[in-house]
Length: 215
Ligand code: AP5
Ligand code: ZN
Image (cartoon, rainbow, N blue to C red; front, side, top):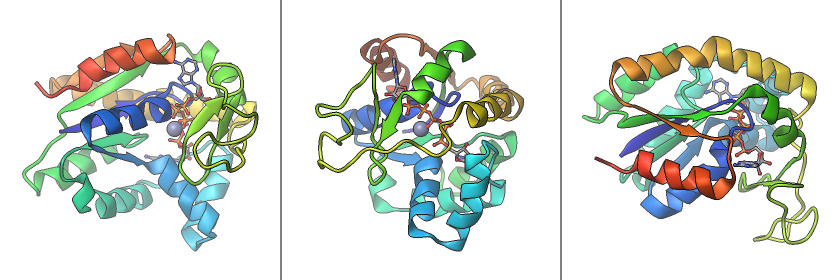
């Protein structure tokens, strides 16, 4: 099965996707995580992307589509894929459909993380992440066992460089302008579900699990 998680910055995509990945044995592909890997490596792509990401803009369609193309053909993704943060433009959604169709596959469901803008600031400014794995924590809502330390590896947690209020405002606007239209794209195809993402992590998880389950 192939599902897309669609929601604004801080809506919980990166929190829920690993759970879904464990439950279903589907691979988790986050374009944000893939881009942060490039930034960490210091590649040319990473250096270009970092400027755009820190400013809250969108990296070009060609770059993210290329990254996804490489990943979905990996054997570990043959059972199923959770797309997190991709597609975020109608152009990307169409490119993804074409990519999958050439393999006889399709997106089975796009799931919207529905949440009001007002709650996103607190979620984003309190977020801490483990860079290598992409695991995210929250100083108030999902604290690590030891402050500032990843539960699993014992490595330090960091503050994402794009988690400023200023960049968040841009990401929120971009979500409404560029990503909103992909919801209609999937609704028209009849492959759409919505979860109320403004609840605690476990309640969101219960709904998500049901929404993502293959029919
Ligand atoms: P990306 O990394 O995808 O960032 P984003 O879409 O802005 O989303 P976030 O990762 O900020 O939010 P999330 O929904 O994963 O929230 P999380 O679960 O961590 O992309 C970063 C950048 O890369 C983009 O801005 C762009 O520049 C570029 N990019 C990426 N993909 C691209 C594409 N396809 N095209 C072009 N450019 C692209 O949760 C947030 C916090 O809230 C955490 O602290 C968490 O612990 C907490 N939390 C989660 N759920 C709950 C809950 N239910 N209750 C309370 N707290 C919660
Ligand atoms: Zn994320």
